[in-house]
Image (cartoon, rainbow, N blue to C red; front, side, top):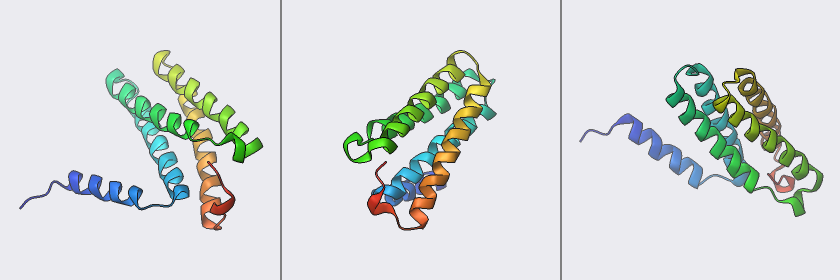
Length: 131
């Protein structure tokens, strides 16, 4: 029986996410958002492909935004709130107004945040970290 490698890979990724710790899921979401933005930048001159990629990135960041816990997160949650708002507005501007620099800024912000979450993950600080 033939199994399409793309289907197998997708099933593996779903299994990886469904069994992952919350902090690992946050890292995976950032990685996916960055990849979607990079794809959007690479395929910028193809409006449909750009729109699909940036729509995916927007959806991921929207999920991160909606998961913020302002009660537990305090100042960190407030700062992430502001950054996520900036990222969401910039993704929209990049797609609608054709602003490539806005998209480059999004990638830079997300990469910086990803680096911080990876550091937290690497040092086992997950108990005190709230996305």
